[in-house]
Image 1 (tube, rainbow, N blue to C red):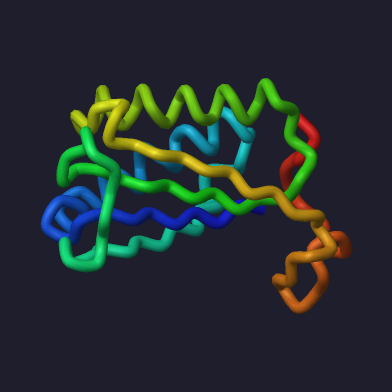
Image 2 (cartoon, rainbow, N blue to C red; image 1 turned 90 degrees about the vertical axis):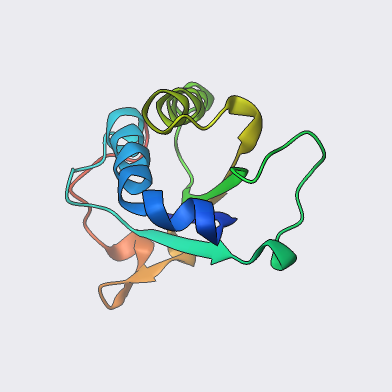
Length: 129
C-alpha cells in the first residue's frame, strides 16, 4: 500500500497534475512492483502566500510525500527516489533542486482499508522487495 501527497504552487502544479501523477505512478510501478491499477495520489495546490520554500528553489518547488507499508529494502527505496528525480526532470522539466521526496513507512497493522487492518488484507503484490 502507498499513498502519495504532492504539494506545490497552484499555478505550477494544476496544469501538470495528470502528467505528474503519471510520472510518479510509473516510478511506483517500476520500483515497488505495484499493479498498474493501484494509484492513490492527492494534490495540494497552494497559494504562494501559503508555501514557503528554501532559498535557491523556484516556484516549481514540489514536495512528494510517500506513505507506505514498511518492508521494502533500502535499495528499493533509493531506486524509487532516483527514478522520481529523473522522470520529473526528463518528463516535466522540474530540476532536481526543485524536488523534495520523503518516504514514511508504517507497519501494515497501522493501516485500515477494505474494512480490515492492513495486515489482514490479502494483497496482490509483494511488499518485501
